Length: 396
Image (tube, rainbow, N blue to C red; front, side, top):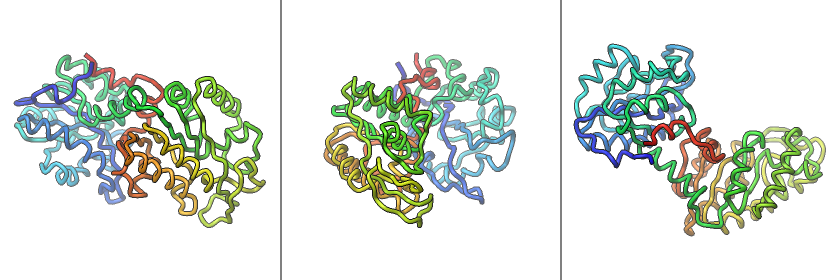
């Protein structure tokens, strides 16, 4: 059983909160997307409103040692604007300054620690490093779903030091609930839309979903491997030849589980990977030599939309084509519109994975789906049926 912040009153407590502030920065060090900071706001406000103080810790980027380019000091202006509180800042996440500032922290104040990954001990899951972090607070809250699949010091190793004083923040709790609503409590029929480039990166996900859902739409680059495996001609389209036997095995597994797999029937092809390349629409199993598939075709768009509208629970992970290019985004856009329509009609929709999230935001549909996941690798591992170490560490 995992407790959430709603199970605690944090009056006069100093709460160590692991957040995911791994936000994109421009060359001037300014935050270009504040979504992750905004999503952490509710948890911080809960603690402050209880009369507690907040100690925020996060990583940023992949620094090799101390590197100003990855300093969390850069996010302070956006954090201040989002929270309405100017945070204090410690130039290291452990050591004398962090300890002194944490000790002096008053109710209603926020302390931001410097990048955890300036220390190799963070990714190594070092116990002594985790203990130094734990010493800064009275309670621990994990609100960083995006890192929940990592057994790092601040996400997993630190939690046992707090015994009964550990909890999931609102973001983490909502992620767990939303994914459970698809995998465990989903109203049938359930649809999983799986796109992206490669089968090899989604094998575990597809195989687990076959056991859980009624329909699976497969689009994007991985679809061409399925088509070629069944004898189709795919020209110069993306294909994992070493995964063709697996593709056929997946189709057989789905059939045995009465799970319908929906593959594209037509495709938008181009002479090369360029938005301005010559293009045409052809049956997906009859792509001419020298042409490559870069999007699903109009017949597939209609068919996939029909499938989406016929389901009560929808998971979407991965685009249908190269939606970053204007001439190859129609398939992804039409699918996004169909999922939004299904949601308006009462379906529960969960969108996860960087490209899918970017797509719904690009098409102005972020508010038209039920839930947008902040996790990439963490989401995929949960969809595979794995237990994430940071979530397991919160269980009492």
